[in-house]
Length: 372
View 1: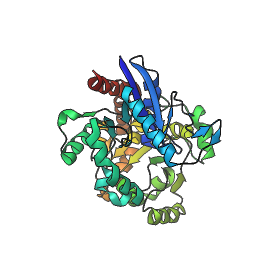
View 2: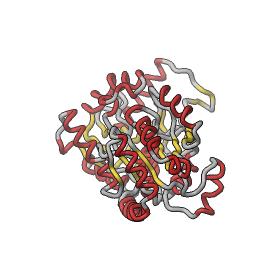
View 3: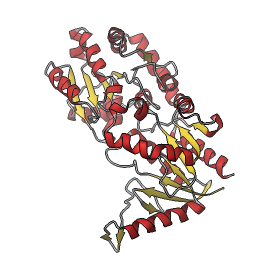
View 4: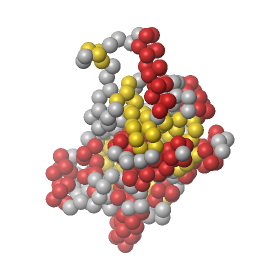
């Protein structure tokens, strides 16, 4: 049995991102594991002995907020070091706190280095200050996919035995669901079951949403009107021009941008889609693609980075910069019934091989290899 694990859960915050979901699923299973003696949770400088999705980490004494002070910062540093004397620290979101002399780090992708223009300046600055130090102190690195593992090896020059790929999972809430179950949710958004294409993605350059819009405009007007494109996701860095295009094209009746939607609605919106399109050219894993396949929805995606590894032949893979080819693939996903049936069944089979339980079990094996 592992004596103790300290898990950083800073990324569990609304709205929940893919990294936040990974951390939440891992925290839930780590806290319930019989293979770990003690688990502590660390968020924004504060500690908790217990985890739940509503765990609050507040700097309080008898319920009264404390002001930050040098003395408090010193106390927090000493307390963190004491915890790490008995607990192996896992930084689930790229970084180890400065008080951690040795731990485990999960690197989800290297987009901040490959596409720095798609990240806010303060995020880039954080990586410049902390990333190399965190990697240097890491006893082991975890990546979400083999593609990212190989990229990290080549970029950082780390020994191959120091990095393990641990694939993400998919919640069982993402599954094919009957019309009567999801109908109410769809009506709230003005949607009809099986009569829209879906893309869930942050609006930022590497996601290639502008190419998706260009490809959709090539489709026959009758197809666009019958199967409008629905975009879900927060507006990201450098998205002003894209948002203007979305507003303009939405007036034509074939495009609707929902922005951020509640987490509970996502499985219903996935299940009601006729096709899922994900043209991103860079992903550490590509969780939305897995969620779509688990929902029984045919997928069109790009052939880059981790996406072939996740889809395993169940999706149409096409370079989004080839707009004509992308339009052809989208058209097929909407109207070719033979391919759609094959893609649905093969996508469901692939999705069943990914689970959050497996992700947690393989992560614990990494802990054991360090602790043992």
